[in-house]
Image (cartoon, rainbow, N blue to C red; front, side, top):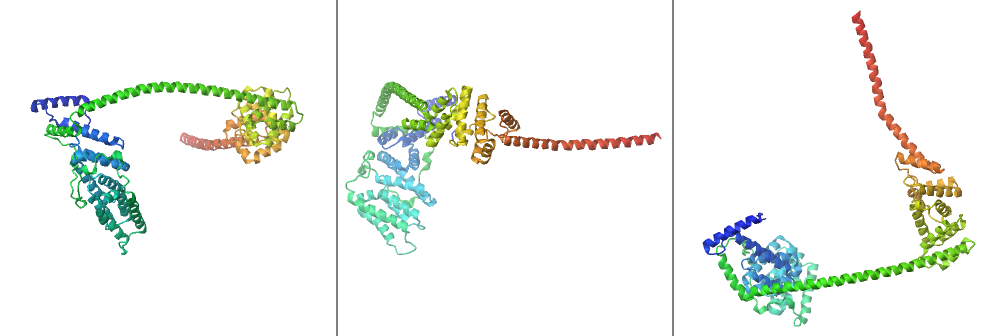
Length: 597
């Protein structure tokens, strides 16, 4: 973690260093602060390029790397490549393609990366980190496919796994995975060595008779599968390319191949000091040398080409912005048209729905007026009613009843037969009751009365489940119209069934008792219980509120007992204290009397 330096201090240090460098060396960069800042910028550039690389921009990424001083930052480049490949092993072929392009021009970078990978493999193998070891082996495999590293390392790694002293199935898995990545290239480049160094040892292991060295059944199956894949590849190896065309930046014959020995991994120098900043006394000379090498790779006019590319990119971006603005305007207009069309279609659909509902209401009204008996009305309604119109029929029956000058029992009987004919009518009649209860203030007294008569008829005939209607009622949190609706509904049920039958039904039905906790609030506080009891008494339904009254008496009794318990010690203390004072007063008077005598 670097120390934070404010911008004005950076400018002061830069001015002082510029003065020193200009005065001493005629304008050469000898300041450690400037070199450190350049090193940090180089690290950020290399990391950004590696993070952006993909299969489509490998050549462009290589060009961007050549523009940076990757000879000075070769340690940073190798570290970024290894970290990126470990984070996303599926891009191993892309990173290997990038390394092959860099290795062709600067082989020192390819050699450093190969050394670090070999050392890393040796450390991970000793540690037993199989996941990271698989990533390193995969990177080495693709470097071999691009001819950056020799095949000897691949042979040594495969045999190191298969002939390990304490071999396990994980070793065989690692060897099989590396074999599958590289056997196509090995079979094309040198068939004799491939058979001698890989296939023959694998066949010997499979034919091993010694129990101590014999492979497990799983490992044998895995290696036999690998040999079977080799046989299948031999039939098509001259017609299939191993390297994807977009990743082949350098021909294998033009590549500089590095030979390293896995046995020297323990004492191999990975040059890890290249990852850290070191002051360079010959900084300008090294920069000039790299500039010469860079011009040889990119050409003498690489800076001019870079500026032209930047200008072209800016023009293209401006054109895209202009096209984007036009596209956004067209999209906004198209969206506005679609909104208008959607609104018009919704209006048309709503008009069709309104017309359909109006026709259904008319049919229900005509059926009620032209029939004498309830079953005849229901027959006509069900015969002429389209599908998915049960809700409209339910609401029309209730509204038609409320428009009559006097209540007619035929409406309750029609509602009863509709509920018993189809369960959908029960759902919509319950919904209608909830709606009219919640908006009871908007109804006149006659509408509330007729609604309660219909639903008291439905409840007493069990055409509608009681809990669906009574669960809506709330005796405490209700206004005047809602309390009137509760009163007339319960009174209608009591008149039809009797007080005892209604009370037994409310007490014995567990589902109904749990649904009427708001109508009979036995769990409320003392104030709520008292309010509920008073309302039931005012409605003339005191017997239905007997449970609430009993709970109120219980709460009051427990409160009185609590008060008596808290009051008793104080009273006893006062009594005992008074007696003591009285006795003490008597004793004092007796002593005074004796003294007087």
